[in-house]
Every structure is written in structure tokens, then in C-alpha cells.
Image (cartoon, rainbow, N blue to C red; front, side, top):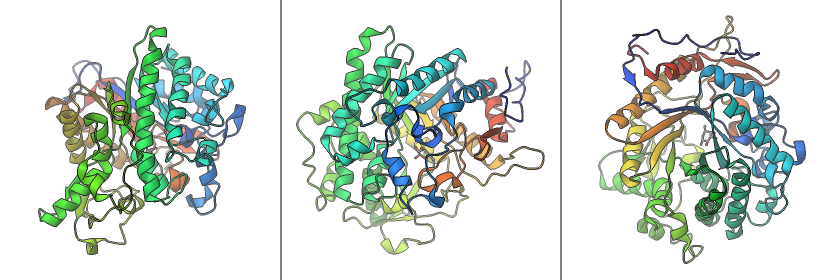
Length: 488
Ligand code: FCB
């Protein structure tokens, strides 16, 4: 085990023979951590990278807290060797990262920037040499600005461009990479980016958001087809999926109004993606309920067959459940957030209510059973598809204490509790095959800039020094044991 040069603590020692592990995960369970290109890479103009919508959005005054931008990120573009050494030190089995489209095609189409591809080539090689499986995501929200100028995701052509780009990346890395996610959280990209305007590109046009959601799904289906079509050139059969932030929309009470609101909220957040993906159709109640916004005229013959192409795996990104009331007066301005606002589409009265549970630094209520509900539901809905938690984690107000450590026991407790739910789901027969903590390290948390820390590794943005938080030491121990201890 080679300690990373800039980390300050070593992970816990491997368990002694015979030491009890109360909650043991199956052999082959994937233990990983995740990041995304714009959140960590920095070097936003290096080696021919084009401009992304997040460069433009974050440079627009008032869009991101503190005026933060993709610089410096965590300087991962230049420090990836050190970061992979850190992952190895932690014992990670897999690293989920994303590929920045504007590094590969600065304008989102046409010419390929070899220097950009080379970065991911080197990263993949470094990971493999460290015994860590590379898990790229092809789109984690950094659309080339030129494509946005051409209309962005509300325009069909963007889906076609995405499939071409996906084929380029697979053509380069497909000899070494097996596990591919096409998209990360199409709900955020469409509803937050085009509807509520709190994410790039910052548009506030509900009809555009719904068209964007469809074209993201179409892009996913076309990318899957393109990758499968050319996969024969390699000895490796790709496993394809996407990471979806499904959550539970629990009715606040069992009143008919709350149940109707919860069902509509479930449609807007979950079924509008999973019905096309797994059942080849948009949910009728949602199509009807959104009739005043769109006629879904962007759906062309054959699209749903492309979108519902069978998947090998599905990523679940889960942070918190939601409780929904049918009484708009129940909205509490103190807790209302951007995600809640983004759901104000259609004519069904709806309010998101809080239960007074403990929250993370994002104000998100902690209820791990929500993850259990999501896993069991998706297992029933997508039989035969391997499921992974592709993101789960929490922001807290971390401090480096005098002893040089970060004693983030709340984060450890959060991850521990959610892992126990994953285990419970496995016991119930759900095909949960892996878990990726969000995030490997503190990073640029979108509209919150660097003000929210999700990492199990602390990053000092002035010096770029990495410090393992207690949660990282604990996670490393969990990985080595293959499970959780009774007292953890
Ligand atoms: C998810 C995003 C990820 C990160 C976490 C906290 O929605 O996929 O990039 O910001 O939230």
C-alpha cells in the first residue's frame, strides 16, 4: 500500500482473521466512489477543451454562490495520478468519473480533439494499473456551449450529436472499459437546467425542459445502439446503463389530495424517465397533466423503441426521499428549495413538506428507508437489470481539527445507514451489485459552488492538499472487510 504523498492519515488496518462482520456483502460487490468532470477537473481551457454550458453559466454573475466556477476544481486533470494513488490506498474497486464532452469535441460535433481523449486514456490506464475498474459516464451535464447555441437539449439534433460523441469515446476506451453510463440524472439536466434555470444553461421554459428530457433519453438510446454496434471491434462486451436520480414521493397523509399530488410528483420525477426506458411509453397521467405546457410533439415514431432498448444495468443516485401534500398552502418558504420549485409543472396542486428529520448541510432530510423503497421498486420494474447505487452521500460542515483530521461522523453514519439498506435489499433478492459513494473528494457542487463538501476526502482549494476524512478511513475499512461491523 503506497500512502498518497499529500494525505495525512492512513486507512484502518485490514481486519484480523476471525474478526466479526455483521453485515457482509456478496463476493464481487463493487465498492466505488464517484466524481464528475466539471466538478473536479479544473484546467477548463487546457489542451484544446471547448467551452461548456457550465463554464458560461458559472461565469454569469449571480448564478453560482460566491461566483465560483470550474476553476480550480480539485485540479484532478493534472493531479489524477495522485488521486488514483489515493483511491488505491482506500482500496476502491471502481472509480466512476465522467468524460467532458467539450474536451473531446470542443464544439460538440465534428473534429475530435485528440489531446482531450488522451487525458481519459491516461486516466483509464492509471486506474487499471492500480487495479481499479474505470466506470465512465458520458454526460454529466457539461454540454458543449456551441450545441446549446444551436438549441441545446430541447433540439433533437443534440441527441444525434451525443450518440456520435459516445461512439468516439467508446472507440478509444472500449478496449479497456466495460461499464458505461450514458447519462447522469437526466431529471436535473432537463428540469433544473431548462425549466427552473438553477443549473446550466439557466433557461426557464417548462416546454423546453420536457423536450430536453425526451432528447436526453433519445440520446441515451442512440448512444447505447451506437456503442453496441461497434463493440465487436473489441474483445470486451460493454455493459450499458444510465444513472437516474429516482426518489420516493411519499404522500404526506393518505388523503386523496395528498395521494394524487404524490402520484403526479412521482410521474414528473421518476415515471417520465422509467416508463419510456422500461415500458416504451410516456405515462398517460403525465402527458395529460402537462397538456397545457406541451403536446409531446417532440416524440417521433420509433423514438420510444430506441429509448427502451434493453439495458445491462441501472444506476440509482439517491440522497433523500420526499413527502408530498396536495395542499399548496403547506409549502414552507423556509424549506422550499430549487428541486421543489422545479416540480411546479402542470395543474396538480402540490407542496413538498418536511418531516422535521435530521438534515444534511443541503437541508435534505435523512431517511435511508427511501433508498430501500427505490431499490425494490426498480428491481420489480426492470427485471434482469443489474442495479448499482451510482451516487449516495452527504454534505456536512466539515472542519479540519487541530489534530489534522476531519471527524465527519455524521457522514459516516449516513453512508453506514444507507449501506445497511442496500444489504437489506440484497437479502430481499434485489440485484444490487455495487455502491459508489458521492463523492471521492470535495468538489464544485453546481449552483452551490465550493460551499458544500460531499467528499470522503477533504480538499483545500488553496493548496489542493487532500486529507482523508474519518469517513474515508471508515469506508476503506468497510471495503477491506467486505461489510459492516455491528458497532459501526
Ligand atoms: C447529484 C449530482 C452530483 C452531485 C450530487 C450531490 O445530483 O449528480 O453531481 O452534485 O448530486
